[in-house]
Length: 71
Image 1: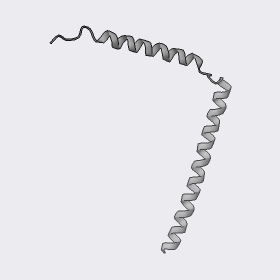
Image 2 (image 1 turned 180 degrees about the horizontal axis):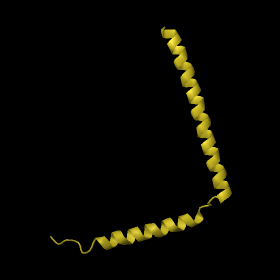
Image 3 (image 1 turned 90 degrees about the vertical axis):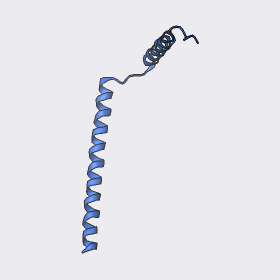
Image 4 (image 1 turned 180 degrees about the vertical axis):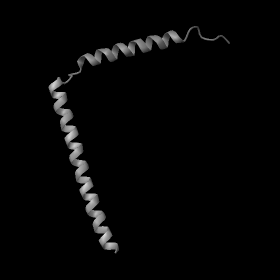
């Protein structure tokens, strides 16, 4: 039984083709401007803070109610 000759060259060509495709697709991406990026980041941070505060209020309220119910 003979081993196949140099099977890595096919893999290397496949990786190269894949990376060329990735590069081609990244050129098509509509990247946000710095101003848009900062604005979107601020929206995410504010939303996270508001949801955290809401969950804290709900948790505290239900915890207090449960303590009253169990006493």
